[in-house]
Image (cartoon, rainbow, N blue to C red):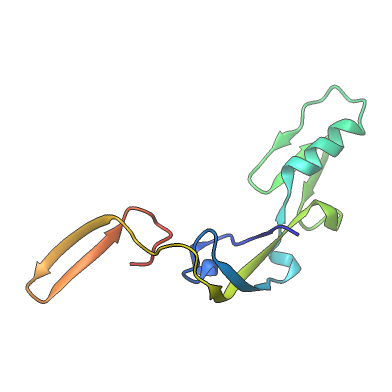
Length: 116
């Protein structure tokens, strides 16, 4: 099953390719799988109306579909990483260093998935 971490906070410093342990978030935080729902709506309809897609909803034939009112097969499970089992990513990063004084500097990585 495919699971998504929707924010860097839920990634818990894990990178792409790392082997992680994760916790599935409650169903009310799952996201609408718009592509799969849209394909099924169009396939099952004889209507000439075009669907209207919003950030987290699809309106089609006068009905609005959201993550709260569709079948579970149209939902993308979301999760948060609770532990990194094996680090595969090399953990090297490029970025900018801002020196504030001789004792303090701030590193700002170019990749926003790298913690500051």
